[in-house]
Image (cartoon, rainbow, N blue to C red; front, side, top):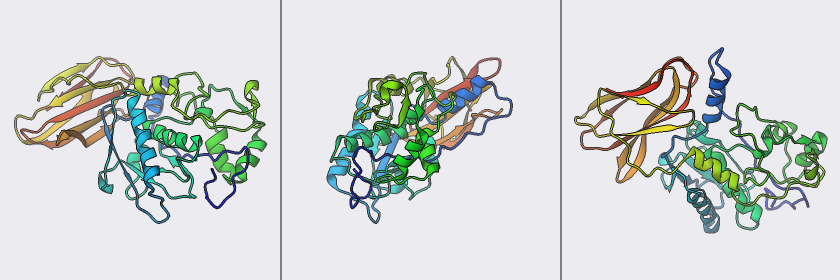
Length: 355
């Protein structure tokens, strides 16, 4: 379907989502390849167990049609039903939403990747749907695709292991005309640009992924079996499911309690996470932090009416110091501290402490 309902779609040319630039992490000079790769691969991922709140923006030109909203809700639920530790909650207050969804027609479809949404201030959207999500299988797939970006997935056809050789001028001409009308710069960013091997997890291209674009015949030179094009992936693939469950495994056990002045050694490998409950014995300001030559992202959540709400967090990746959280905690309230490891880049083991 064309981005603008008034336009006539061009036969054989899909309407693609565009992708905002990623926020590049600051890496220390002379960082080892393993440390650099761990930060780049893990930087977009949420701390597992996070509750992502989403809301729909009521803005000029937005089509807040019930069928469109229900399709987006179903797409969130479909990702949840894969079996992951993230939760999704719809809210009505803009200030409570990490994910803000625009349905303004004619402005393309896109989403920021993973935790990059936290750097987008309200009332700006972090996700947009610029065409109908219910008229075609392509529309339904768009809802799953954009949520996949918010979970931390990149475009699959930009996987450096795909081995795609493009007929670049044909790609520029195809995407430069209706219904996309992209500039050469935008086409390069979204189609031709290959991600660094340091930015992707795994080494296998998945043309069935919902994060893959469909392509008409004539744009791909190699692999030869795709000269006739790539069909429209319309569902979350098995490989999508494998990776998202690996990033966000189901959390079903109650985490151990972290007591003040208690140091806990964390026997984690890159990408793994440790969770702790905190039950303050007194109301005061507490500090929590990691120790050792390691890169961590930490997040503190407070239990409010049975839901863990984000309280504060820190990301020390790419620095030579350790992350510290400082927060006033109240006696009788329940808190959960989650720490995901990027890498251990020096001698010794990583530890976590509250004081």
